[in-house]
Length: 372
Ligand code: SIN
Ligand code: CO
Image (cartoon, rainbow, N blue to C red; front, side, top):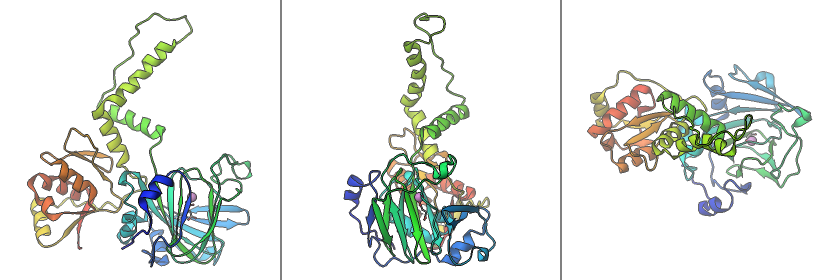
C-alpha cells in the first residue's frame, strides 16, 4: 500500500496546476513496485511503448523500443523510459491508487524510468501535469519558471529547450515527490542508478475536442443544420460580423445540447493514449460469470481502463474506453459505484441488470476474473 503523506486540500488549493513543488518524504517507507529487470523485460514487448535516451555531451539521442538487450548502452549516460506501466503490470496499481484524489479522467499513465548515472532526457517542457516519485537511487531535478524558451540549438522540431535558470534545484531520494504543472521547464540528472515513476495528467485540447465533436456527428449522422441569413450582405466581398457570429452559433448550439456534450466528453475522456492489455474472452456467459464469482473469483478492470459516469446523464450509462454503454435498469448509485471501483462488488455484478454489462466487458477483454 502506498500512502501519500501530503495535505491534499492544501495541495489542490495552492499548487495543483499552478506551481511546482517538492514533497520530501511524501511516501515514507517507499518500496519500488517494479524491479529494474522487470521494467527492462516489459520494454522488450512490442505493444509496450518504450524508449532509451542516451546522453551525449550537450545532446541527447532517442532510441525507440522494443529492446532486445541493453548491453550496448554501457554503465552510464542512458535512461530507459517505459510508458503506461500500469496497463501491463498490475502490481503498479497500488501506487496509482495513492493519486486517485485526482479524478480518473485526468490521469494519463504511469511512466517508469530506469536511469544510469548521468542519464536523463534533457531540458524540456511538458503539456501535462506530472508527479515524479523517486524510487531506488538519487536524481537531481531542476525546474525553471514558466516562460518562452528557445528550442535547443534553434531546431524548431526539437523536444528539448535551451538551458534555464532553476527556481527548484533538489536531489530526490526514495519516497520524495516532485510535482510539476504544465509549462514549467525541467530536467532530471541521475546521480546513482535510479528508478523513478511519473504519474502524468492531461486535459483535452481544443483540437482533440473539435475532432471528437466531428467524429460524434459523423457516427450519428447528425449536425446537418446550416446557417440561415437574416440580413442582406453588407457588401460583395465582406462577411459581416453578424454573419460570422451567426455561423459560429452553430457550434455553440452543439455545446448547448446536453446529450451531445455527455457523449462527446464521455467518449473522449474515457479513451487512453496508450494501448491497453486487452485479453478478449468470447467464451464467457452469464452462467460462467456467476459461477466464477460464487467460487470466489474477483472481477477486475484491466490496468488503466477508464470507466466514467457523466454527471447529469439522462441515460443509465457508462463510458468505457471511448464507448458508450447503456445499462438498462441500473441506479445512479450503482453506476457511480462501478465507475469508482477497480475491483467490482461481486453482489452487484450478479444483479440481473448488471450481468449483461459485465459479460460484455469480459468478452471485450476490458475486465477479467482474477484472484484477490
Ligand atoms: C524523467 O524521468 O527523466 C522524465 C520525466 C519527465 O521529465 O517528465
Ligand atoms: Co518531463
